[in-house]
Length: 357
Image 1: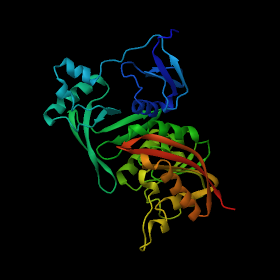
Image 2: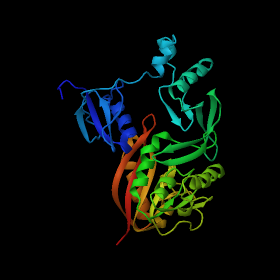
Image 3: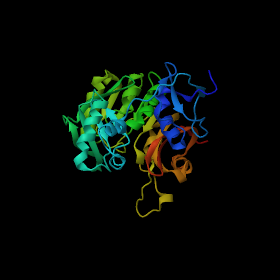
Image 4: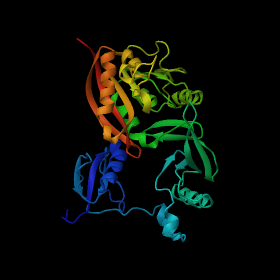
């Protein structure tokens, strides 16, 4: 290996997307080279210099770098687009099954179809390009519109062997949570009892059930619930999933479990009741999660947290809820999942919950 070889950061495959995002924020990710496999379990991510803020397994020389294939901007330049026109082109998109989902915010409407056509060229297995326009309604339904292709919003997406059927015009699916979905499948043990309080179409439920866990999955959105049932059969795990269309605060569903997954961003938001201040209020969902856990059980709490309040806000909220319930908290891990919005990060806490005294 020559001392002049370009560098690559070695990370586990399950951590690849998070690491790339972090390396980009740090300013050391090398977009001119392709990501390569380092082993069956690891990726080599191209970097311009050793990272100082991003956690990686190793940094190695890469003697035979592989140039990145032409991307969207390259192909549009070949078609005569100038730099001013390229400024409004989507910089990121997700391929979900046969559908490409992109943010077209700065792109003129009359040019979206041209961009969509090139995206279909780049991703030969896709047949539809959708523009994301936001989230609406009580059940957080996506608002999308077709900009190119067949316009079929229903698809089956496969991740780490788990198959997700969905309609992207009716239910949410976050590609940035891919590593976290895979991680949950790796964390559970066969026969473990799990409560998934916000199951959706089975984001976390399916990989955990495929790993042998017995999952109680709760989802109140009727469309997402229908796909949850369909996906249970699609993955052959319907015998390990007890699905309920309900609000996870209602009744005694899923008590006495070894693990609780709270995958909804606002799961740890406090509520006011009867005029009480926030510091006196009970928690909207955390009290139900902690009540469901056996002594020594584990909870996974997701939150969208301002950078300025990492990690004080999510940790203090969990500790306050545990104190209110007469429980003790042992923090096991805290992870950034992805960027949520400007200055806000999607994070998850893993904690063991015991009995006080």
